[in-house]
Length: 302
Image (tube, rainbow, N blue to C red; front, side, top):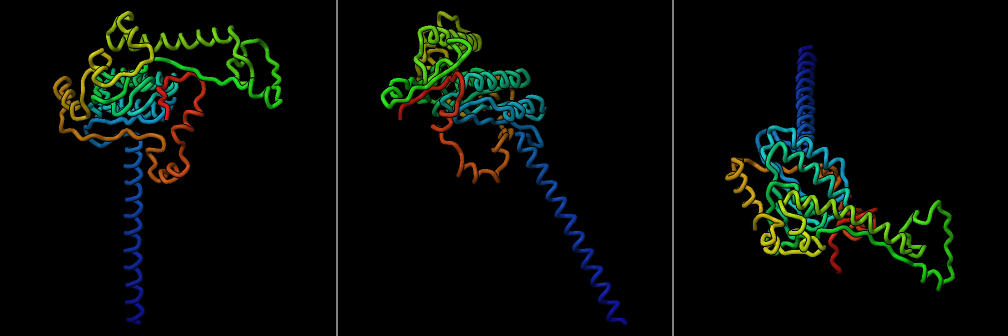
């Protein structure tokens, strides 16, 4: 009987140990999920400087806007550094990012650091900041809007294909690769392009404190090096993140010793998704092929 009693006591002790370990494991999982949720929105548990990476093709992104709204509201975020390496993107994508960054800038300092490339809608993104840094060899500028279409009617004639279209008015679905681009359609399309272009130029003139006449020769779609951009007033200074932190410390009294935390959103907040993103993710070429509507994008032939 004594042996049986000892066995039962050992069993109870073992079950107690297992229960303790299970509870500890559950607590650890909950803590990890809370930490991951915080990182997903770019938040940390103390004062810090947030860093937002903008790369590739810029499109409208509600998850990015939500993450930036949290940055604007979080009192622990002392400033935001926007790292840009992008040829641009859609007009709406650039405009949405510009306006969201201006909301952040209303609450705390925002600094842009352009890497290799920051053109078109990416430059629109940069001018939302309080100060813009770039390298000597950075390519920036390309202020403009473009809509591209292809007329394949000549090719279809040669191979004996005749597309038929029924539409409510002559300008519906123009430009259209299956119809000639008429002078009336060209003029209507140009009016839309110029309206978006005027909006872009107005943003630059306002943010860079330039007269439209002064800006006109710089806003013809050309690109600039970082040094040229500084000389023409399109950016503020040559430098990278170190110079941005120094400016924040000197001009805005943001402690240079504060840690930097990434603003994460979308797939960037889900590390386990990365292998699939790498395997099935779109190339820059395929991203461009899927862009709809007007784009503000600097395109380099490869």
